[in-house]
Length: 67
Image 1: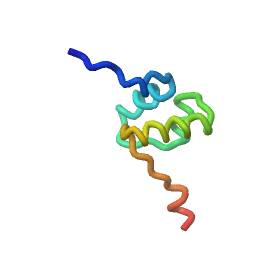
Image 2: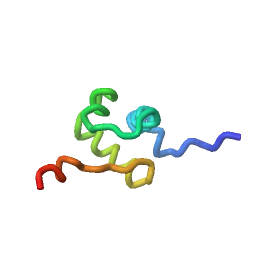
Image 3: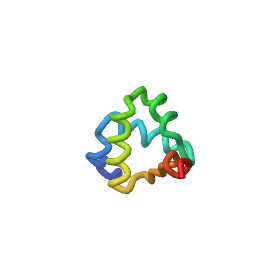
Image 4: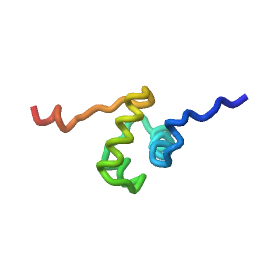
């Protein structure tokens, strides 16, 4: 029997991100932005929601490179 889909994943963008990430080990923000045809702001918000829910881990390499 299938479990019900988490309401968090009902968002088309969040569902799209999860679908893309299932086929890769990691992905860069710009790649996800291009593949989902989303704005940087919207994608950032949706990635935060997925991260807070424990679906993904976000690593900010731009901050690490600047130090």
